[in-house]
Image 1 (cartoon, rainbow, N blue to C red):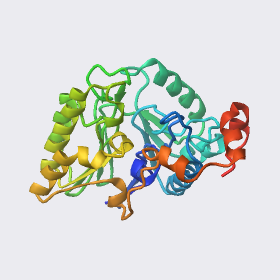
Image 2: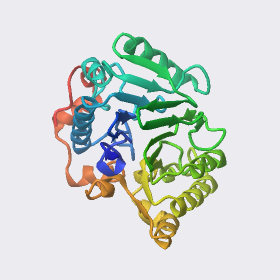
Image 3: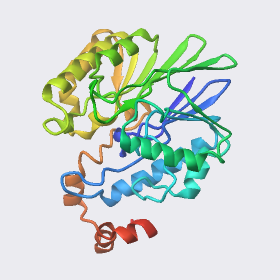
Image 4: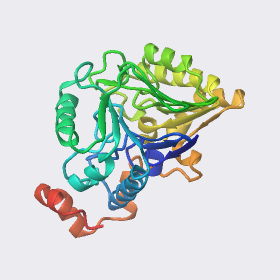
Length: 320
């Protein structure tokens, strides 16, 4: 199998967009990308807008090659919405390019979904129904494409079991003796149910959303993050290659805070690495270093005017 991580925090943006190709089928997982509207009280820096533009271009390049596009849940960094937003670097034309003519396998909006994601799902379905080749609710389902098997979990919690952030689907793609598991936004996992599900797979490669260290004291407790780290360390012992992604990489000190995980992998001669490292690049944690970006490269007056003007932000792309 060929696995290409297109966009992710270690590559400068909020995303886990991944392209997986077997001899039978090509799949684009979670074709979304986004920037945090505010971090440290600051909007995204121009460098971040350049990164989201480049990430969107990569997503479109691989969308043109994909037979299938999936949606694990309806957060804006995990799917392409049908409206204009430069924080996601999208519009109606880009939406069409991503989903037109595709088999679209999506999380069901009929159960295990919170109100905000339900509204987004309905808007998405209304826009995509006449574009896609086929739209299928895939919660808990298995699909076979010649010798390739694609399996979706039942909805699992977005973090802890009672998370208000809703539920997500974990995807497994199997070809021959290879298995890749994609576990977005499980936040460690914090949930024992999610941990058990992942450990039961026979993954050679796991792409997983780590604990949200940057939210400690706000939306998660330190105890929950510690549970997530402990569970991630257990996973790193079992799975040969674990790509640590997403929420964890929104903190500058992610590496020292993840020592337990990295040591667990090394002891088994396994790999626990970032998406950037997997792709052969240096880590580029732009959101985590947003304050430093503003200090080192102050934005132009025209950019600051654009970012403060909501009407202009919709009608015109940022002056970067």
